Length: 579
Image (cartoon, rainbow, N blue to C red; front, side):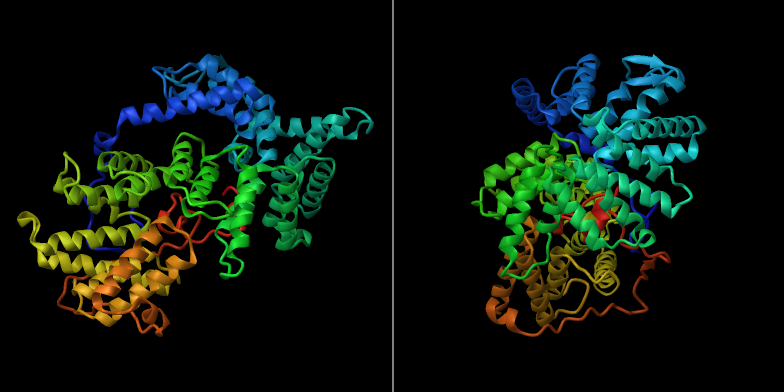
């Protein structure tokens, strides 16, 4: 959790209870999922020598997933096969098992080399990986870091650029088959070594990328899109040109470009008339991208099957299979498909969606997501403990989990944690916790966070609207006002209907039930003009809220806020680059 960046706090929370999450993890489930993944990928590797299957097998042997122990020799063999097949993640991982003589003794290795030898082994493959796709591995970020921090690495990278330049300048009829790769890698080296941001050098790099693309290497087109995104204003290019090159890369088989366009289509804010076209495009692009089935791609495909979008039938069982594959796969850089997969599986098991309810399995998946720092998963787990859904339920542990989330940088999750704490302190169901003042203080924190989201960030989630509605309906910490509650439930329904969010649709059903209970017909409620406006309690006698002087600005997320299946709306440009 670290330093607090939640916008509103009541008081300092209890220390994070991350270590207690282990008690909810089921080793048999983990082992079974990885055993299935190993069997599936072994078949693919043996039958078609599939590059991504080879990568994943190397990954499983590297970490000992689904087996009794690591097998570093077999790991290296599979990484080597993936690397030779130009898989960018395999190229990056290949020499992670080679370490320098200065590395700690406990570091897993198959070979020890000098620092200089290690740099010379890694640099060419890092360049190949990053020039193929800057988001399929940490190669791009590591190269940029090493250029600025290591004289040895910078010198070796410059030497590699000069070697590529000599090959570029030789007779055009030579090494013709490698020329598209050569041009792309040389353009990439010109790009990352341009520390002075020389416009002409950027233009030369873009020119080599285009040559690579025109000669059949789609990574060239993808890199032009990236370079336009970074410095388009300097070289006279616009974002619409970046998109056109992204489309060309996708049409020519670039898996990451296909994923980006599929992601964009899935989250497109289309009108009802062209939503079908958007989801059809999403399904087609993501289907093509799934030849490299990263966790993020699998999760989006799972959601399409869950909702029956993109010209396919609703199929919860198949959606679950995609989510299960996601939790055993690898993520793109800056994405959180493994977290999303675990959370959605937990939600499906908790609510009995497409399967029998199983709170023990739900707790496992929530705990797995929570261990990867997803705060809302910890809240869902805490609520199961609070409601005594597990044999090892512990209300004090639930409270500790909620308190740890109030310090989360995800202030929607922090708001939900305050809501649950407010109910616990106010209800009187737990004598030792009963404290009306604390309860009201927590409810005001919920309201204040919702105000921040709606007025500053210009966005609220269905679950935050729903719980503010519940507060107005029940007079929880604020004056009872059924009209305002009704208005908020309308917001929940409208938002959920405009997007296919698994959790959002769940809260839409709850909002409809609340409207029916209040006697407001849903159709009429949706036609009425909204009258809701948040009024923050200004009672000076009440315990004051602590308002942080530094307000967290929306940024590239560290963890997906799954309610709307993303944190702040990421557009294509945010996704295009690894920051």
